[in-house]
Length: 370
Image 1 (cartoon, rainbow, N blue to C red):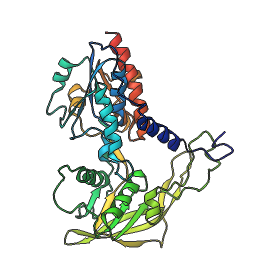
Image 2 (spheres, helix red, strand yellow):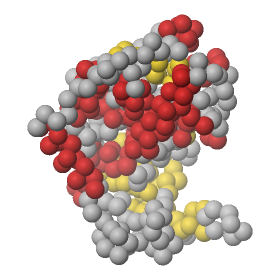
Image 3 (cartoon, one colour):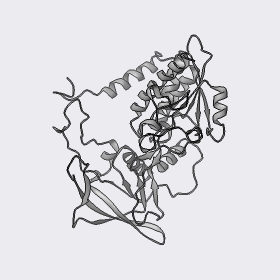
Image 4 (tube, rainbow, N blue to C red):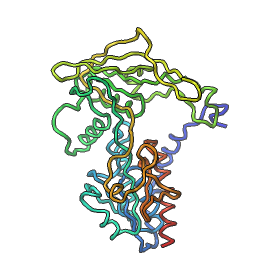
C-alpha cells in the first residue's frame, strides 16, 4: 500500500544497499555462460540499452561485441551524468564484470565510418543499434548566435572528459568558473548543469523553466497508480536557488558578439479547449532582464543523431525521427534490431535498460529461428 495511503518506501536506496553489500562480500562475481553458441551479435552503442542487450545475450551464451565511438564504454552513464550524481567507478565496475563474463568492448570506433555495415553482416548473425537520442532541442530566439550559449550535453560531456583525464576541447569557453550562468530547462539535465557550474566556481547560477511550478503533494488529477506530477528537488537545487518557474526567454542580448543578458517574461499556460494542449502566454508587465555570460540550453532532445547504417539501409523512422521497430525490436531489415532512446525517444535510464532486455529477447528468438 506504499504510495497509496502512506509515504512510499525508499526502494532505490534499499536496492543500492543490497547491491553494494553483494559486491563487498563477494556475492557478485563473474559468471560466464557454461556453453557458447556459435551465433554472434554486434551491438552499436554502450549506453544503458546497449549494455542491457549485451549482458542479456552474453548470459544466454551468445558471443557479443559492443562498438562504442567514445574512448570508454557507458554512454550517457559515463559522459552525460556528472560524477557527483553517478561516480564513474560504479560504471567501470559493471563494465569490468561484463568483460570478465565474456563481453568484448571495442571503443573509439564509429560504425559507418571506421567499419561498415557490410563488415558487421560478415562478422555477426544479428546487429542491434542502441545509439541513443542526443540531438538537442534548440531555442530559436533573437541573439542565439551570440558567443557564450552552449548545449547542456556538450558542457556536461566536456567536464566528464576532463575529470576522467581524457582530451577535451581547448579553451575556457565551456567553464563556469567566475561566470554568471543561466540554465534554460528545469529537468534532470538542467539540474546536472546547475550542480556542475557550482562546482566549477560560478559567480552565480540561475535556472529557468517555462512550465508552471508542480504541486508539492499529489494532485487529484494523477491518482495512484498514475505517475504523480510533483515538485521534485535534486541535491543541486538544494545547493542553489530554486528554479524560476513559468518563465520564457525572449531574447539574448550582447555586445561585440558576446552574450551579456537575457530578456525574459513570466507566462501562464492556457488551453484553447477541444482537448488541445495548453500553450504558454506571456503575462503583460512581467518582463525582466537577467545578466549572464554563460547560458546552458537544457531543453531536452529532438531525435537521434544521423546514423550511417540507418540511412544506408533505408530503415523506417517513427515519430520524431526515432527508429521504427516491430515486436521484439526488429527493424525493417532482417537481423537488424534497435533498442533504447533511439527507438523510444529521450527517456529514463531504467526504461532504456528495460527496452534493451526486451530487444535481447527478440534477438534470441530471431537467432533461434535461423
